[in-house]
Image (tube, rainbow, N blue to C red; front, side, top):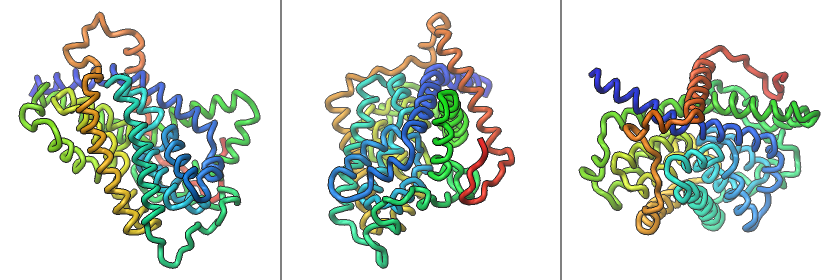
Length: 384
């Protein structure tokens, strides 16, 4: 038992060394994107018909700092603001599959080709699903094709939606980060550069960190457990490679509440244990894009046929992408050193500082989630 605890602690610290700095950089970038891209811009660009809203929805989802459950109220709000069914679905797929905090982390753990494969496959999946839903998805009975706001020319504040209790929301109250609050906060932020910089750090290292804290902790703990329990090469020797492990990753990932960032170290640990890079890619693509809450929203707002298209498209693209990657690009993977490969002399001060700072922020965020939070009445923005 003592040896296992030592292996677990060592594996956990190695993961922090490998991921801490890159996670901090990703959260900083998330704050920058939040300040630069308000929700009103999304509503304006995703409304209307044709191919361009689908393309924009697929591409705009990539840089936005929303996880697999916080994307639901945003996608629902965009739908009410006039976004088509296909554009709403495309946004809901591409946004959680990858993001600015997960791409640099994937780059650090797997190398550049693997990291760039995630957003490319995410855009292709989202666009295809959106196009199919627009083409063959049924209209919801009793609902017009456009949402209540019609053309989407009204303020996005009319589309603010209550956020159900989910993994990224501690209270089933009006989300304090709704578009109404974002509009007023962004107006205040424009008063000076210092205010905007402050908002970048507040959103990236307070709001985002608190929203993702539980799932980051779960992902890191699971990764360390697998590393401590499963020796390198075990999965390849006992489960094999090819289609079977990819289907297994698909079945495991689709119903789970996971985000792109927390899934990355988990996939990395599984690949170190012998899972093929392509099967790891299946988990990274299928896991964040599907969960029970997302499927409930698709069923309610877009219909049964749209839900079937949504799930089948994600499954097909994830498995096909994994097979293609293993066939043509597996040799480009450059796994970060782990375990015994981390010699003390090779650990830089940047890695150590990143691990320590990220650990402190993660611990604070976990504690903050259980602290009493002041409820904000609907339509009222908290004072900054």
